[in-house]
Image (cartoon, rainbow, N blue to C red):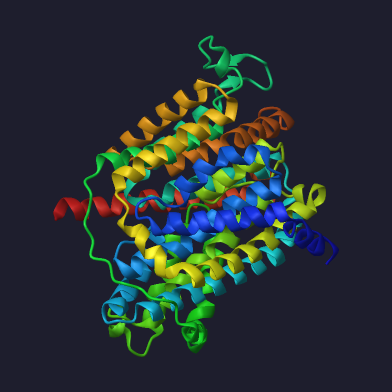
Length: 495
């Protein structure tokens, strides 16, 4: 309780509360704007966290992260255009409700369900993270390496139809992480004599480029799409209690969202899909789903927003990001010289519980902002994507320059942005590369340490029970993924 009260005291500082409010507003707007997403918003804001305290920097990025989930429901319900992939399920029943004149009810249902999911996931973070950190605190180098390998295998297997592409991008990310001075031999690796590369390729400009610049180029090069928005008035406060009419759906969706948020690379899109179809399966009237059933909105939004707390569990306890968003958020720890993991609970407990308190404040702030501004948020859906792309591009270049006050970071962001844009055109996933970059250094350090202790013998990874189980799980997932591909190929050839 002492550490928890310290966390709330840290999060109640005016600077942190200001960052929470700013992040919530930006996140909602980012979620409302179709085609942007929290990854772009967070990557643009990441350079600004350099001059902030660690908790303030985390608070503003978490505000964008959670706010975008709420905001994505606005476009899904009003214009049938999901701001995020995780908002697709909300669209199925939200838009039909809006078309029959129940837009306010649909939005109220979405926000109330998302609020319930966000608060429960924050509570889960506070309850589950400490015992999990105590368990992972006994991990050795082999166990850490095995955990990272399992996470990367999960990332690759998540892209079932593009497994080889995801594996290639993970490898590319791990390769980029090796650029610079070798920490053991002090030799130069892939620097080609360039002084700027001796310290490695900085994470922030590359992330800004891969997400922000690349998405800006996609928006600028894409034709504008005309939509027929449905008008929205104020929210219906009575409808905020309506999700309680579906306690089974609400509890199952929140549980699914939190648990799947812990899994690497699973993402909110998977949790919303599973929660939606589970609600449909258990419903007495499954045919009404997709035609404006409020229970569908409750299931999708509760699972969607409960993902955030679960995703932060693995970051804080293992130092392993579950998706691209948490990988970027880890950049705040890296910038301030803080190593996320089990030692964080011993060295900086006020920061851990400050994150929990911030998530509580963020959900309260977002709900208050939405109650007051939903009527005008729909206007953002009419922004010209070309103008939006130019604005994002400008912000990206300003943010990249601010990281080192040199044009080197700008050119690096531009190069990464062009690469990300080409990958988007070719259907190559960028997320596995970012996760490979973030986890590459930790994987290399753990591997070298484990092999140094064992005298170079790889048997160290199967001699310890934890690492043996993790390696076995990684091999099982890899085998299952390859088996599914081989089994599906004859079917495709026959068709």
